[in-house]
Image (cartoon, rainbow, N blue to C red; front, top):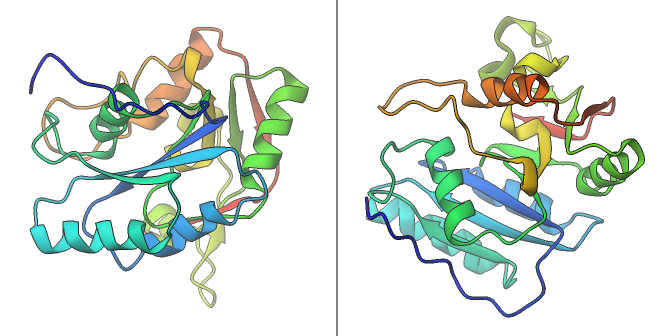
Length: 219
């Protein structure tokens, strides 16, 4: 990976929030996530879809999903072979270094649905509580995230998110205090770097608060 990283040039004013959406091999899920962002009541944003797929056909599908939105605030960023480890943490950091301009950062996955007032409520709460990190305490989750905690008939449940294990889909963080996912692996493998991030920020004295609303669905 090159030591020099070029930042994309954009002359428009910096948006309030940048959504960095991690995509890999689920192009069928990606449209729901992106359209839920497009439909936000808070419209001062940009979206960067980080694409770790090395399959040309899948990359083409991801690009088409972004193009179908017909919205210049959305961009596709291929990160495969540009990062040391092909995971959402490395790709998110690459996007921040090369393209992100927002004052706040959010990290939904391609299988995440954000309620229309997600950003509006989270940002308002951050301003009211003077917080630099805000997490949504009660997301709706499927089996991938909650396992046996889901309702047997519905297939979904409500997850009580604790500060020391806050998944990246459920928080926003002020860019000025975000120093990267320090707990990410330097090799391929399952990693909870987002949990480590919230714990580390708490230890470092970052101003953090919880919004007790259900504002997202994470499959």
